[in-house]
Length: 189
Image (cartoon, rainbow, N blue to C red; front, side, top):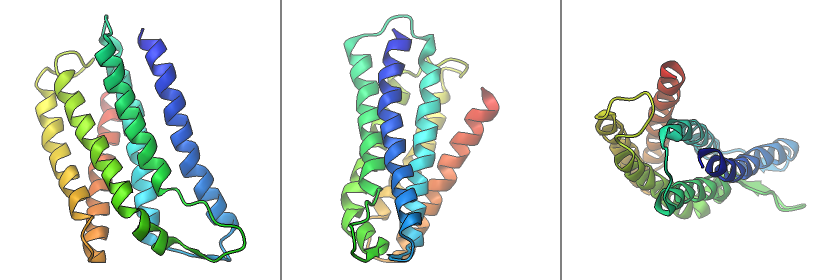
């Protein structure tokens, strides 16, 4: 069943990745019309790193021998939230019009960060639900994962604030934590 579920999730993750990469490609191609926003680029990078972390994290569930409908739905909910996190931050340049990445980020910020927060909450739920079944980790590892997820969730909430400095700080904090998860996963598996 693991292979069957991961196949479905891989399609969702691939489509999410396609949104990010297509958006980046189109922005590069239309760079003469684009007004670049480092903040928007940072949050696109966050979506990409989060996607990689969550995709790699699925492997830990290969230890599950039996999958319930609830297990499948929880995994699909995570993949769906991941999809919206990536698709909502991905800018599709309008034909012939100037491209203002900063204005797009401001318009999309509430829904994008809401999707990201939902993803974080689902991830925290998964950490707890699968606390005794994740391959290669001690049974209490979920507590450490939750302690790392809590500041990430706080960063997402702070990023809703108007001051740009808080949006930048939150994005950098989130990128740091996600990079830690990515490096830790790569080193331990």
